[in-house]
Length: 175
Ligand code: K1U
Ligand code: ZN
Image 1 (tube, rainbow, N blue to C red):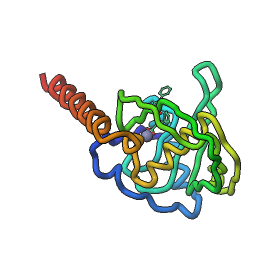
Image 2: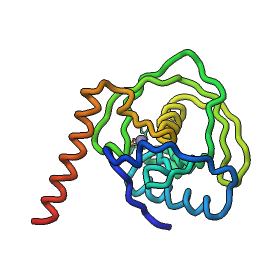
Image 3: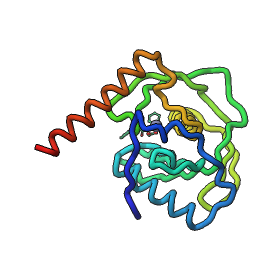
Image 4: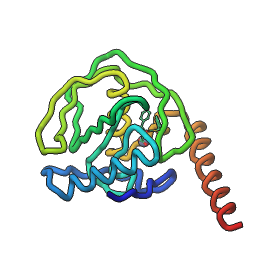
């Protein structure tokens, strides 16, 4: 399995709308395996293919706690069929906006349809962190980042923080 480079803001690739997978095959499963490895390495609890530069509607997640067995989840072509009116405020982070966290409000429960690792169609209601994380990841498929839900000022602050950290790291590496 290959650990891929995770793109960070303001890379314009992150703004692309990803295209449907339509059929599950070994090439797609290899992409999902590599994405999962990349997500564990980061570490994170979710990753969309566009974050590693691949514009396909594919997501991996693992919401298991540090003392629990790994519980990888794979989603291709996910769709939200229904949601509820109740909203939930949750502090989100993003591997494409490292070291920046802010609260975002999203529907508390959603009815999800997707294709799993084996190409089987799954329809299920999800809530809590599952609902928050999958909605964050599905935003990525449409070129939307969690900072796009914040004020322009907070968004600019986030992007500048990431750019400064990357500049500082480059200077340190050159010394
Ligand atoms: O970049 C991403 O899309 C992944 C992101 C997912 C997410 C986190 C929180 C709310 C919504 C979506 C992350 O994984 S950020 C890192 C993170 O949350 C984490 C890292 C290590 C341990 C536990 C959590
Ligand atoms: Zn993200």
